[in-house]
Each structure stands twice: as structure tokens, then as C-alpha cells.
Image (tube, rainbow, N blue to C red; front, side):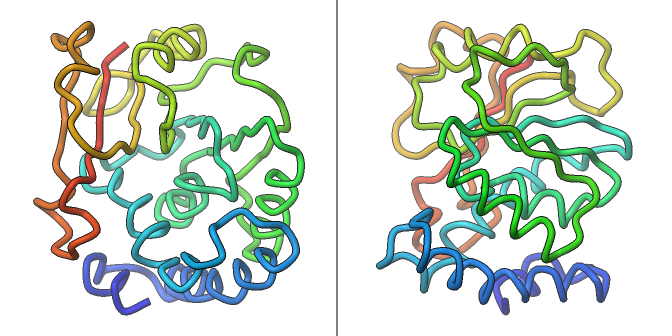
Length: 206
């Protein structure tokens, strides 16, 4: 929790309480349904929560923005972002039902009224959103093909609507087909922990 306070000192008391509650919630649910690697649960705040909040370093979503978190797993980046932006609507989607169950339980425990969930595959989604966020394991070109249909035309934020995903490693080759519409931000510019040396936020305007 110190990490969250270190980089986001202006949180409300309610946000601090919600972030602090994530530790027990994820430890409890992870013991029943494995959504975070067992050996990584002790790194929850650095590797999962703070990593998710890397998106909040590149854009301050306006109230009323609609965001889909595709392949949310146990709720990352969607749940930390929903705490950070209580006036923004988040729809968390995963193709594995037990992961959505964890998202539901965490949402209910935190009383996050700005979070909805859906157990389905990305191909089945027809709704439109301002942004799609993802901790992406899928190649960027494939991800853009999958979600382009879900990005609304009218933009209301400082950045045009599109895809914002968290990725690691060398991305120059991967982003080449969309280079003109893509901005890559190194999270090491914001977070000084060693974990973030190779971590990036990739934004593709759609």
C-alpha cells in the first residue's frame, strides 16, 4: 500500500481504504481460485495494482468515459482503475468464468458501483466504448483487429478513443503496422522499481 501512496498521494480516504482492502481480498480469493500466480501474490501491489495504474499516468479519464477491460483475469487493470476513476464506467470481460467470479466478489466487497462484468469472448462483444484497456498477451495487431468494432467514433477525452494496453519488452517490430497511430510510454519514467524497467503502456488511436 505504501507504493500506491508514494505515487498517488492525492487519493481520497475512500480510495485508500479500497486499495488497502485489495490485499486480503485477493489473498482470500486466490487461495480458492488461482488468478494470480501463488508466488506472485506477495507482489500484488507492485506487479498488479501499481502496474494497472500505469494507465492513469498517461491519461486522466473524464467522468462518464466508458471503458472495456478485455481479458481482465482477476480484474487487472480494470479494478484498480475503477477505484482511481470512480466516475468512469468499467466493463470487465474474460472468457474464463471463475475469473469473472473473482471480479464480481472483489467489486461487491469494495462496493464499486462503476464496474460491470461479463463472461464471454471478445469476438462476441458488440457494445461500443471510448477505450479498451488490456494487460495484453495477444500480439497488438490481433488485439486491434478484435476490438476495433468496440471503439466508439466520438471522442470526449484529451486523447482520441482507442486501445490502451500494458506490455513488456521490445515492441518496435510489433507496433510497426500501426506506428503512425501508436504512442509507447515507458513506465520506468514514472515508477522507479526494477519491475518497471521493461514495462510499457501502448496507446493506439482508433
